[in-house]
Length: 282
Image (cartoon, rainbow, N blue to C red):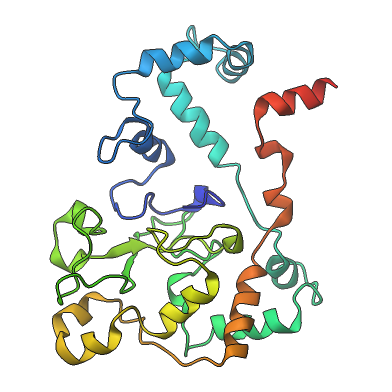
């Protein structure tokens, strides 16, 4: 899942309504074992030792935690990564320049038409991909707490009743509720043209195929409507399906491409710190 504007998320990971802070999210890939990702559980001291062996990190942590006798600790590593992630703010896409900067030429005709489709009641894309991050509820300084929202987009039906793969049941894995089968958090659409493949499991290759998936109301919609009312109730009611001409689909994809923020994606501040340091010294 993209880290663009991640500081504003109401929750983290694809399907866990209990992870509400970046620091808590960091522990999932670092220490988690279902599945094992970084595999650092029990190796925290080794991680600290490896970073402490590098001059750059000793200097950076000493500067960040000047009042601490031990500035480079595992807890500070978690805090530092989360703090960096909060700087990953994307908001200079052509869409932003038109809507918030009054540059009416920032979007071409196709993207403008696609924007109308995106925000139309017929397609209702904005219902799930809402807010400044195009990802649903957000939180910021002074805002009230936001309740995370999860959606079943009809990706799977393994048993005729809407079952998802046993290892990937969505929010149900956390809550144990059958109604949470296949429910996942909507990701941000910012810079989405650069983040293929799509859906939580990468099972759709292109943006055009994503649009077709939603136009169909999810996989197997016809069978679900006719033979399995129980399965249909698990799919988000927002996935009613819709018809699109080829030109409409192209326009919608053009709008999604207008959410690409090239200044963000090429910002040297988000690159390898060792290379950045070398450039600064040249």
